[in-house]
Image 1 (cartoon, rainbow, N blue to C red):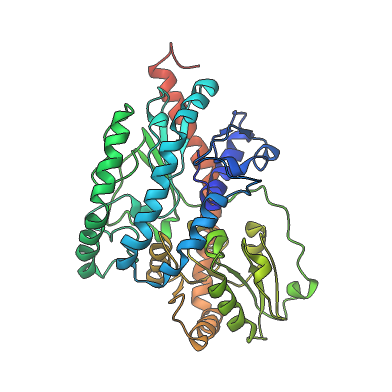
Image 2: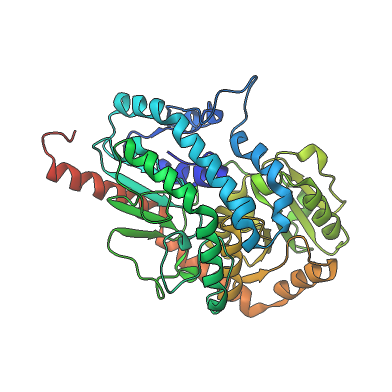
Length: 428
Protein backbone atom coordinates (compact mmCIF):
# COMPACT_ATOMS: atom_id res chain seq x y z
CA UNK A 1 0.00 0.00 0.00
CA UNK A 2 1.90 3.06 -1.22
CA UNK A 3 1.09 6.69 -0.66
CA UNK A 4 -0.80 8.16 -3.61
CA UNK A 5 2.11 10.36 -4.72
CA UNK A 6 4.30 9.21 -7.60
CA UNK A 7 7.49 8.85 -5.54
CA UNK A 8 6.37 6.14 -3.10
CA UNK A 9 4.31 4.41 -5.77
CA UNK A 10 7.28 4.26 -8.13
CA UNK A 11 9.47 2.78 -5.40
CA UNK A 12 6.84 0.13 -4.76
CA UNK A 13 6.53 -0.56 -8.48
CA UNK A 14 10.26 -1.23 -8.63
CA UNK A 15 10.22 -3.59 -5.65
CA UNK A 16 6.95 -5.18 -6.75
CA UNK A 17 8.33 -5.87 -10.20
CA UNK A 18 11.24 -7.74 -8.64
CA UNK A 19 8.77 -9.80 -6.59
CA UNK A 20 6.82 -10.63 -9.75
CA UNK A 21 10.01 -11.88 -11.36
CA UNK A 22 10.45 -14.23 -8.41
CA UNK A 23 7.00 -15.68 -8.92
CA UNK A 24 5.06 -13.88 -6.19
CA UNK A 25 1.57 -12.44 -6.37
CA UNK A 26 1.61 -8.66 -5.80
CA UNK A 27 -1.58 -6.73 -4.98
CA UNK A 28 -1.59 -2.93 -4.79
CA UNK A 29 -4.07 -1.32 -2.40
CA UNK A 30 -3.42 2.08 -3.94
CA UNK A 31 -5.62 5.15 -3.90
CA UNK A 32 -8.40 4.91 -6.49
CA UNK A 33 -6.95 7.40 -9.00
CA UNK A 34 -4.33 4.77 -9.90
CA UNK A 35 -6.99 2.56 -11.49
CA UNK A 36 -5.69 1.07 -14.72
CA UNK A 37 -2.10 2.25 -14.17
CA UNK A 38 -0.80 -0.74 -12.21
CA UNK A 39 -2.52 -3.73 -13.82
CA UNK A 40 -0.64 -3.30 -17.14
CA UNK A 41 2.59 -3.75 -15.14
CA UNK A 42 1.46 -7.16 -13.94
CA UNK A 43 0.07 -6.20 -10.54
CA UNK A 44 -3.41 -6.76 -9.17
CA UNK A 45 -5.34 -3.62 -8.26
CA UNK A 46 -7.45 -3.54 -5.09
CA UNK A 47 -7.95 0.20 -4.87
CA UNK A 48 -9.34 2.38 -2.09
CA UNK A 49 -10.76 5.89 -1.82
CA UNK A 50 -9.16 8.28 0.68
CA UNK A 51 -12.14 10.63 0.38
CA UNK A 52 -15.62 10.58 -1.17
CA UNK A 53 -15.15 9.91 -4.89
CA UNK A 54 -15.10 13.15 -6.92
CA UNK A 55 -17.29 13.78 -9.91
CA UNK A 56 -15.68 12.78 -13.19
CA UNK A 57 -12.45 10.89 -13.75
CA UNK A 58 -9.38 11.28 -11.54
CA UNK A 59 -5.83 11.02 -12.78
CA UNK A 60 -3.22 9.11 -10.80
CA UNK A 61 -1.97 11.16 -7.87
CA UNK A 62 -4.70 13.82 -8.10
CA UNK A 63 -5.32 13.33 -4.38
CA UNK A 64 -2.10 15.24 -3.66
CA UNK A 65 -1.77 17.40 -6.79
CA UNK A 66 -4.73 19.63 -5.99
CA UNK A 67 -3.73 19.82 -2.35
CA UNK A 68 -0.18 20.90 -3.17
CA UNK A 69 -1.42 23.42 -5.73
CA UNK A 70 -3.53 25.08 -3.04
CA UNK A 71 -0.83 25.09 -0.35
CA UNK A 72 2.17 25.99 -2.52
CA UNK A 73 2.26 29.71 -1.47
CA UNK A 74 3.40 28.44 1.93
CA UNK A 75 6.53 26.91 0.36
CA UNK A 76 8.13 30.35 0.39
CA UNK A 77 8.28 30.25 4.19
CA UNK A 78 11.10 28.87 6.32
CA UNK A 79 11.02 25.25 7.43
CA UNK A 80 10.36 26.46 10.98
CA UNK A 81 7.22 28.28 9.83
CA UNK A 82 6.23 25.39 7.55
CA UNK A 83 5.88 23.14 10.59
CA UNK A 84 2.48 24.74 11.17
CA UNK A 85 1.48 25.96 7.71
CA UNK A 86 2.64 23.02 5.54
CA UNK A 87 3.68 19.98 7.58
CA UNK A 88 0.66 19.89 9.90
CA UNK A 89 -1.91 20.32 7.08
CA UNK A 90 -0.26 17.46 5.18
CA UNK A 91 -0.53 15.25 8.25
CA UNK A 92 -4.16 16.30 8.64
CA UNK A 93 -4.94 15.35 5.04
CA UNK A 94 -3.17 12.01 5.36
CA UNK A 95 -4.95 11.21 8.64
CA UNK A 96 -8.34 12.07 7.18
CA UNK A 97 -7.63 9.68 4.30
CA UNK A 98 -6.53 6.90 6.65
CA UNK A 99 -9.72 7.16 8.65
CA UNK A 100 -11.91 7.26 5.57
CA UNK A 101 -10.47 4.16 3.91
CA UNK A 102 -10.17 1.97 7.02
CA UNK A 103 -13.39 -0.06 6.47
CA UNK A 104 -12.63 -0.70 2.80
CA UNK A 105 -9.03 -1.60 3.59
CA UNK A 106 -10.17 -4.24 6.07
CA UNK A 107 -12.37 -5.78 3.37
CA UNK A 108 -9.49 -5.87 0.90
CA UNK A 109 -7.19 -7.58 3.37
CA UNK A 110 -9.84 -10.19 4.17
CA UNK A 111 -10.31 -10.91 0.47
CA UNK A 112 -6.62 -10.96 -0.50
CA UNK A 113 -5.42 -12.81 2.61
CA UNK A 114 -1.81 -11.65 2.18
CA UNK A 115 1.30 -13.38 3.48
CA UNK A 116 3.07 -10.03 3.98
CA UNK A 117 1.63 -6.51 4.19
CA UNK A 118 3.87 -3.67 2.99
CA UNK A 119 3.16 0.02 3.51
CA UNK A 120 5.08 2.90 1.93
CA UNK A 121 3.32 5.84 3.52
CA UNK A 122 3.74 8.25 6.41
CA UNK A 123 0.64 7.51 8.51
CA UNK A 124 -0.71 4.41 10.20
CA UNK A 125 -3.56 2.36 8.76
CA UNK A 126 -4.75 0.16 11.65
CA UNK A 127 -6.11 -2.45 9.23
CA UNK A 128 -2.56 -3.15 8.07
CA UNK A 129 -1.14 -3.94 11.52
CA UNK A 130 -4.11 -5.88 12.90
CA UNK A 131 -4.53 -8.34 10.03
CA UNK A 132 -2.43 -11.15 11.49
CA UNK A 133 0.09 -11.04 8.64
CA UNK A 134 3.59 -9.59 9.17
CA UNK A 135 3.68 -5.84 8.56
CA UNK A 136 6.65 -4.21 6.81
CA UNK A 137 7.15 -0.46 6.69
CA UNK A 138 8.98 1.22 3.81
CA UNK A 139 10.45 4.68 4.36
CA UNK A 140 10.91 6.40 1.01
CA UNK A 141 11.22 10.06 1.94
CA UNK A 142 14.33 10.53 4.07
CA UNK A 143 15.74 8.39 6.90
CA UNK A 144 15.51 11.37 9.27
CA UNK A 145 11.94 10.10 9.65
CA UNK A 146 13.55 7.47 11.86
CA UNK A 147 14.35 9.83 14.76
CA UNK A 148 17.46 9.91 16.89
CA UNK A 149 19.29 12.30 19.21
CA UNK A 150 22.36 12.52 16.99
CA UNK A 151 20.62 13.65 13.82
CA UNK A 152 18.62 16.68 12.74
CA UNK A 153 14.82 16.63 13.12
CA UNK A 154 12.91 15.53 10.05
CA UNK A 155 11.52 18.20 7.69
CA UNK A 156 13.80 20.90 9.17
CA UNK A 157 16.44 20.97 6.43
CA UNK A 158 19.03 21.65 9.13
CA UNK A 159 22.57 20.43 8.67
CA UNK A 160 24.38 17.77 10.64
CA UNK A 161 26.70 20.43 12.06
CA UNK A 162 23.89 22.93 12.73
CA UNK A 163 22.68 21.39 15.98
CA UNK A 164 22.01 24.82 17.46
CA UNK A 165 18.72 24.94 15.56
CA UNK A 166 17.59 21.38 16.24
CA UNK A 167 16.03 22.11 19.63
CA UNK A 168 14.04 25.10 18.39
CA UNK A 169 12.60 23.11 15.49
CA UNK A 170 11.72 20.13 17.69
CA UNK A 171 9.96 22.41 20.16
CA UNK A 172 7.97 24.10 17.40
CA UNK A 173 7.07 20.75 15.86
CA UNK A 174 5.78 19.46 19.19
CA UNK A 175 3.81 22.69 19.80
CA UNK A 176 2.11 22.45 16.41
CA UNK A 177 1.56 18.67 16.32
CA UNK A 178 1.05 17.30 19.81
CA UNK A 179 -2.74 17.62 19.84
CA UNK A 180 -3.03 16.17 16.33
CA UNK A 181 -0.87 13.21 17.31
CA UNK A 182 -2.86 12.60 20.51
CA UNK A 183 -6.17 12.53 18.62
CA UNK A 184 -4.81 10.23 15.91
CA UNK A 185 -3.17 7.92 18.42
CA UNK A 186 -6.48 7.60 20.28
CA UNK A 187 -8.24 6.67 17.03
CA UNK A 188 -5.52 4.19 16.06
CA UNK A 189 -5.73 2.36 19.39
CA UNK A 190 -9.53 2.41 19.25
CA UNK A 191 -9.24 0.36 16.02
CA UNK A 192 -7.29 -2.28 17.92
CA UNK A 193 -3.81 -1.27 16.77
CA UNK A 194 -0.84 -0.64 19.09
CA UNK A 195 -0.17 2.86 20.36
CA UNK A 196 2.07 5.04 18.23
CA UNK A 197 5.51 6.24 19.40
CA UNK A 198 5.46 9.78 20.77
CA UNK A 199 4.85 12.33 17.97
CA UNK A 200 5.19 9.64 15.30
CA UNK A 201 2.26 8.90 13.01
CA UNK A 202 3.16 5.39 11.88
CA UNK A 203 4.19 2.08 13.45
CA UNK A 204 7.41 0.25 12.79
CA UNK A 205 7.05 -3.19 11.27
CA UNK A 206 8.39 -6.61 12.11
CA UNK A 207 10.93 -5.50 9.54
CA UNK A 208 11.50 -2.10 7.94
CA UNK A 209 13.04 -0.99 4.67
CA UNK A 210 14.30 2.46 3.81
CA UNK A 211 15.40 3.67 0.40
CA UNK A 212 18.55 5.79 0.63
CA UNK A 213 22.12 5.43 -0.64
CA UNK A 214 24.88 4.66 1.83
CA UNK A 215 26.77 7.77 0.70
CA UNK A 216 24.00 9.96 2.16
CA UNK A 217 22.94 7.84 5.13
CA UNK A 218 22.88 8.86 8.80
CA UNK A 219 23.70 5.52 10.43
CA UNK A 220 27.08 6.72 11.71
CA UNK A 221 25.18 9.16 13.95
CA UNK A 222 21.99 7.13 14.42
CA UNK A 223 22.68 3.39 14.10
CA UNK A 224 19.73 1.17 13.22
CA UNK A 225 18.99 -2.32 14.43
CA UNK A 226 18.74 -5.61 12.57
CA UNK A 227 15.05 -4.92 11.88
CA UNK A 228 16.05 -2.23 9.36
CA UNK A 229 17.29 -2.84 5.80
CA UNK A 230 18.76 -0.01 3.76
CA UNK A 231 18.10 -0.20 0.03
CA UNK A 232 20.53 2.06 -1.84
CA UNK A 233 18.00 2.67 -4.60
CA UNK A 234 14.77 1.20 -5.94
CA UNK A 235 15.00 2.21 -9.58
CA UNK A 236 12.14 0.68 -11.53
CA UNK A 237 12.74 -1.03 -14.88
CA UNK A 238 9.25 -0.53 -16.27
CA UNK A 239 9.66 2.73 -18.20
CA UNK A 240 9.92 3.07 -21.96
CA UNK A 241 12.66 5.12 -23.61
CA UNK A 242 12.14 8.84 -24.22
CA UNK A 243 11.95 10.13 -27.80
CA UNK A 244 14.44 12.97 -27.41
CA UNK A 245 15.47 15.40 -30.16
CA UNK A 246 18.50 14.01 -31.98
CA UNK A 247 20.63 17.10 -31.37
CA UNK A 248 20.20 16.65 -27.61
CA UNK A 249 22.23 13.46 -27.86
CA UNK A 250 25.08 14.61 -30.12
CA UNK A 251 27.32 15.52 -27.18
CA UNK A 252 28.01 19.05 -28.42
CA UNK A 253 26.25 20.78 -25.50
CA UNK A 254 25.93 19.56 -21.90
CA UNK A 255 22.51 18.05 -21.30
CA UNK A 256 20.64 18.91 -18.08
CA UNK A 257 17.43 17.46 -16.64
CA UNK A 258 15.08 19.78 -14.71
CA UNK A 259 12.16 18.54 -12.61
CA UNK A 260 10.32 19.80 -9.54
CA UNK A 261 8.40 16.52 -9.33
CA UNK A 262 4.77 15.77 -9.98
CA UNK A 263 3.77 17.86 -6.95
CA UNK A 264 6.25 20.73 -7.08
CA UNK A 265 5.40 21.20 -10.72
CA UNK A 266 1.99 22.47 -9.64
CA UNK A 267 3.66 25.77 -8.69
CA UNK A 268 3.49 27.25 -12.17
CA UNK A 269 5.01 30.58 -11.17
CA UNK A 270 8.15 28.92 -9.79
CA UNK A 271 8.37 26.50 -12.72
CA UNK A 272 8.13 29.29 -15.29
CA UNK A 273 10.59 31.54 -13.45
CA UNK A 274 13.16 28.74 -13.34
CA UNK A 275 12.56 27.76 -16.96
CA UNK A 276 13.00 31.39 -18.02
CA UNK A 277 16.36 31.59 -16.21
CA UNK A 278 17.57 28.34 -17.77
CA UNK A 279 16.35 29.50 -21.16
CA UNK A 280 18.97 32.25 -21.19
CA UNK A 281 21.79 29.67 -21.03
CA UNK A 282 22.03 28.74 -24.69
CA UNK A 283 25.26 26.84 -24.10
CA UNK A 284 23.22 24.03 -22.51
CA UNK A 285 20.26 21.88 -23.55
CA UNK A 286 17.55 21.12 -21.00
CA UNK A 287 15.01 18.32 -20.65
CA UNK A 288 12.09 19.62 -18.61
CA UNK A 289 9.53 17.55 -16.71
CA UNK A 290 6.67 20.06 -16.90
CA UNK A 291 4.32 18.45 -14.40
CA UNK A 292 0.55 18.32 -14.05
CA UNK A 293 -0.05 21.89 -15.29
CA UNK A 294 2.18 21.37 -18.33
CA UNK A 295 0.01 23.43 -20.66
CA UNK A 296 0.84 26.54 -18.62
CA UNK A 297 4.62 26.04 -18.82
CA UNK A 298 6.30 27.61 -21.86
CA UNK A 299 9.73 26.27 -22.79
CA UNK A 300 12.65 28.09 -24.42
CA UNK A 301 14.42 27.13 -27.63
CA UNK A 302 17.12 25.14 -25.79
CA UNK A 303 14.53 22.92 -24.10
CA UNK A 304 12.39 19.86 -24.71
CA UNK A 305 9.84 18.47 -22.28
CA UNK A 306 6.46 17.01 -21.50
CA UNK A 307 3.99 16.56 -18.66
CA UNK A 308 5.53 13.27 -17.55
CA UNK A 309 8.87 11.83 -18.61
CA UNK A 310 10.46 8.39 -18.18
CA UNK A 311 12.90 9.72 -15.61
CA UNK A 312 14.92 6.54 -15.12
CA UNK A 313 15.60 6.43 -18.87
CA UNK A 314 16.52 10.14 -19.06
CA UNK A 315 18.84 10.61 -16.08
CA UNK A 316 21.50 8.22 -17.45
CA UNK A 317 21.77 10.46 -20.54
CA UNK A 318 22.33 13.81 -18.82
CA UNK A 319 25.32 15.56 -17.25
CA UNK A 320 23.48 17.25 -14.37
CA UNK A 321 20.11 17.06 -12.60
CA UNK A 322 18.21 20.06 -11.22
CA UNK A 323 15.66 18.69 -8.77
CA UNK A 324 13.32 19.58 -5.91
CA UNK A 325 15.03 16.94 -3.79
CA UNK A 326 12.30 14.32 -3.66
CA UNK A 327 13.51 10.87 -2.68
CA UNK A 328 12.95 9.33 -6.11
CA UNK A 329 14.93 11.90 -8.08
CA UNK A 330 17.64 12.20 -5.43
CA UNK A 331 18.30 8.48 -5.17
CA UNK A 332 17.89 7.90 -8.90
CA UNK A 333 20.36 10.68 -9.72
CA UNK A 334 23.00 9.19 -7.46
CA UNK A 335 22.13 5.69 -8.75
CA UNK A 336 23.18 6.89 -12.19
CA UNK A 337 26.13 8.91 -10.87
CA UNK A 338 24.86 12.41 -11.63
CA UNK A 339 25.60 15.60 -9.63
CA UNK A 340 22.60 17.64 -8.50
CA UNK A 341 21.37 21.17 -7.93
CA UNK A 342 18.57 21.03 -5.38
CA UNK A 343 15.64 23.45 -5.10
CA UNK A 344 13.60 22.13 -2.15
CA UNK A 345 9.98 23.14 -1.53
CA UNK A 346 8.52 21.16 1.38
CA UNK A 347 8.49 17.98 3.48
CA UNK A 348 11.57 15.75 3.09
CA UNK A 349 12.92 17.76 0.17
CA UNK A 350 14.80 20.15 2.45
CA UNK A 351 16.42 17.23 4.25
CA UNK A 352 17.48 15.54 1.02
CA UNK A 353 18.79 18.80 -0.41
CA UNK A 354 20.80 19.52 2.71
CA UNK A 355 22.20 15.99 2.83
CA UNK A 356 23.34 16.01 -0.80
CA UNK A 357 24.91 19.44 -0.25
CA UNK A 358 26.78 18.59 2.94
CA UNK A 359 27.89 15.20 1.62
CA UNK A 360 29.41 16.89 -1.42
CA UNK A 361 27.31 15.46 -4.25
CA UNK A 362 25.63 18.69 -5.31
CA UNK A 363 24.52 22.14 -4.26
CA UNK A 364 21.44 23.33 -2.39
CA UNK A 365 19.94 26.65 -3.46
CA UNK A 366 17.02 28.78 -2.29
CA UNK A 367 14.20 27.68 -4.59
CA UNK A 368 12.44 31.05 -4.63
CA UNK A 369 15.26 33.40 -3.69
CA UNK A 370 18.21 32.28 -5.80
CA UNK A 371 19.22 34.76 -8.48
CA UNK A 372 19.79 33.88 -12.11
CA UNK A 373 23.50 34.38 -11.49
CA UNK A 374 23.45 31.90 -8.59
CA UNK A 375 21.56 29.22 -10.50
CA UNK A 376 23.56 29.53 -13.71
CA UNK A 377 26.79 29.85 -11.74
CA UNK A 378 26.02 26.61 -9.89
CA UNK A 379 25.45 24.83 -13.20
CA UNK A 380 28.78 26.08 -14.53
CA UNK A 381 30.65 25.20 -11.34
CA UNK A 382 29.27 21.66 -11.02
CA UNK A 383 29.82 20.79 -14.67
CA UNK A 384 33.42 22.00 -14.41
CA UNK A 385 34.15 20.09 -11.18
CA UNK A 386 35.96 16.97 -12.38
CA UNK A 387 36.41 15.65 -8.84
CA UNK A 388 32.68 15.90 -8.14
CA UNK A 389 31.79 14.13 -11.35
CA UNK A 390 34.27 11.37 -10.56
CA UNK A 391 32.88 10.86 -7.05
CA UNK A 392 29.31 10.80 -8.36
CA UNK A 393 30.26 8.24 -11.00
CA UNK A 394 31.94 6.03 -8.40
CA UNK A 395 28.91 6.25 -6.11
CA UNK A 396 26.67 5.30 -9.02
CA UNK A 397 28.75 2.25 -9.87
CA UNK A 398 28.61 1.03 -6.26
CA UNK A 399 24.87 1.67 -5.91
CA UNK A 400 23.99 -0.11 -9.16
CA UNK A 401 26.12 -3.08 -8.13
CA UNK A 402 24.32 -3.30 -4.79
CA UNK A 403 21.04 -4.16 -6.61
CA UNK A 404 18.61 -2.50 -4.22
CA UNK A 405 15.50 -4.08 -5.73
CA UNK A 406 16.89 -7.54 -5.12
CA UNK A 407 17.86 -6.60 -1.54
CA UNK A 408 14.34 -5.35 -0.82
CA UNK A 409 12.68 -8.41 -2.34
CA UNK A 410 14.97 -10.74 -0.39
CA UNK A 411 14.14 -8.94 2.86
CA UNK A 412 10.43 -9.36 2.17
CA UNK A 413 10.87 -13.05 1.36
CA UNK A 414 12.73 -13.48 4.65
CA UNK A 415 9.82 -11.91 6.52
CA UNK A 416 7.39 -14.32 4.87
CA UNK A 417 9.63 -17.32 5.58
CA UNK A 418 10.04 -16.38 9.25
CA UNK A 419 6.28 -15.98 9.64
CA UNK A 420 5.64 -19.37 8.07
CA UNK A 421 8.28 -20.98 10.31
CA UNK A 422 6.68 -19.63 13.48
CA UNK A 423 3.07 -19.96 12.31
CA UNK A 424 2.90 -23.19 10.27
CA UNK A 425 -0.84 -23.61 10.79
CA UNK A 426 -1.99 -20.13 9.74
CA UNK A 427 0.64 -19.34 7.12
CA UNK A 428 -0.12 -20.35 3.54
